[in-house]
Length: 285
Image (cartoon, rainbow, N blue to C red; front, side, top):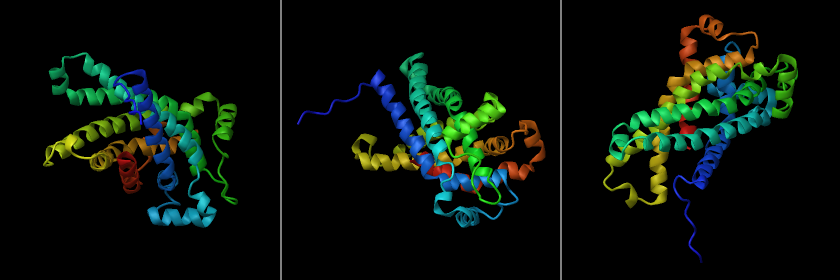
């Protein structure tokens, strides 16, 4: 049997593989935890109706819409986070390589934290432009229901994007972009920085070098590092996540008004427990 050809580091094939890995890492995992995201968004956007925690929220949605209702918004979630993941992971590796290449190896290692942070922030800036219109549709679908039939505002991405653009203008699809940057850029900076450093710390305290562990053992270390990073990035980005949910639900709202009118405790903690479980799992995966 011919030996499988390895992908050359920093080749076009390598950047493509990183982008595909991002699609799988973000698109599939975010879609898998749609029920958690659904409850979290409603706790933020509809706090009077969803104020008794994750279990009660899931039960409420299941009672209204059945099992399929728990996956309301899975279409724009899959599409949006697949696009975002391709840019996030592909561009992170690209920018990390380019930024490190501007220095000699020793300097790049010494200042690796700044490289991790700047590369992840740069990648997420572009990733969120791709995500924004899908996020707008997702939040509308998840938080705006007919009070009698409990049907969402739109059937899906192909229905929601044209209708929002036609009735409210293209800008409505991107009104959530600034708070999305507020949420996602610190989130991604903490995600990649926390992951790189957590994995480094774990291997430093293990009895053998990384190369001496098999692929499964290395994946366990990666998952542990990712989950740890996820807890921190969920907490850092949660206030902006609340603003995104409220802004995309109410087309007349402004960022300033939401921050002013939302009780500070709600802005900082409403839905945070659910989001820590969700983001920790997502980042680990």
